[in-house]
Image (spheres, rainbow over the protein chains, first blue to last red):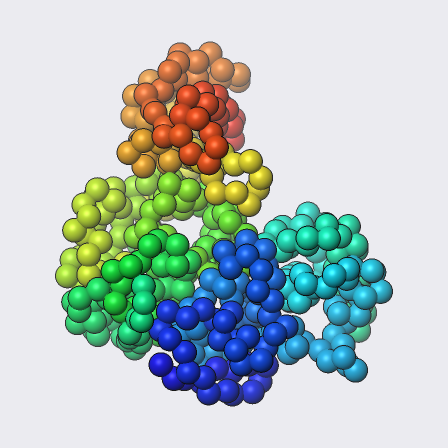
Amino acid sequence: MTGSLHINGTELRASFRGNELLLDVLRNLGCTEVKEGCREGACGSCLVLLDGVLVNSCQVLAASALGREITTVKGLGTFHEPHPIQEAFVEAGAVQCGFCTPGMVLATFALLKKNPKPEEAEIRKALDGNLCRCTGYVKIIEAVKLAAERMAHHG
Amino acid sequence: MDEAQWFFPDNLDQVPEILSREGVVPHGGGTGILWGGMTRVRGLMDTGRLDLKYARDQNGSIVLGSALSYTEAAEALAKADHLLARSLSSAATEPLRNRISLGGSISMFPYWSDLMGPLLALDAELSLVGTNSGTYPLSEYVQKRELRQKSLITSIRWPDVPWRGAYYRHTRTPTDRPAFSITVLVLRKSKRIEEIRIVVVGCSGRYRRLTEVEQAIQGAEVPAEPDDLIDAAAPQPGMDFPARMGFSAEYLKACASVELKRSLAAALRSSP
């Protein structure tokens, strides 16, 4: 089947099979910032925002995303103009191998959009779908707190 | 599932014809379709354009649209501190809760469901569109396989009664699928228990309503410390379990017996 996917504000035409996962379609379109991890919805490496809602792209059939707004981590900030969450991850030392980072950043973005001043328990709950194989969770939680502070001050 | 044809109906009138086609099933966005061995699926009917995302108070009942995700349903019920809000918030992980739909979860009814125990205890009813258009008790829908064929769940409804209760899920880690779950609902008038409902999901036969325990407690006066009442009512509840997730059947039965008593105690203490 053929259809339009709206990725980070750009409309792209894509051809894919009816049973193809959004993860695979995005990566085939060059969105390699969407990482392929477990393919079971357990690790959070492949997270994207679908109409602003955090989802595992490995658990979404691409056809059901047609015409909807998809945001990957590249849609939040760029290398030269990073998002405050991305800056906070760097400053807090929350990036080790970096494989989980796109998913962690998007999960943080989704959390802070709903709850700008989360308690630590709420941060842990919001990141419950993200695994860090380097086990750097302490720094990641510090990064979320730092990002919340920055975003509260700078909007 | 090899190649699947997709259908995108704009309104419910189009649903019966689409679902009458061989091998076409509804898809609300959930993950069950990927996990369920859908080898016979030839087509998928996306429910995203149907108006099935709502939560309403209607004539003394709570009505939820079947396309609500676990997250959306939990948020809609959170203000009332509803037991279902607590059970749905504990299911899976944040991104999966954002995706799993109520309707899909009911039609699949996996043993690890955090939805079905509370809904069965609430005596929920389902509205269907398709070959079996109409309203059915959830318990009937679960028992009769034919009701699940070529039909779309459009809404879930139950009487808005001020139940108090407890929900327990047996897991190794918080994001595990539960090997079993226990739902207890209690309606109290002063110290007297007007009604109690107990549902165990994940036991042999998928779920069991523990009517013998309910009958032993219903109408009783609850003392400040209800342990004796609970011990007398639930000495050895009649439920068995299959071995699963590395747990033996005997172990799960022993755990369920202990957790049932704890859940009863929590529910009785939580009641006003």
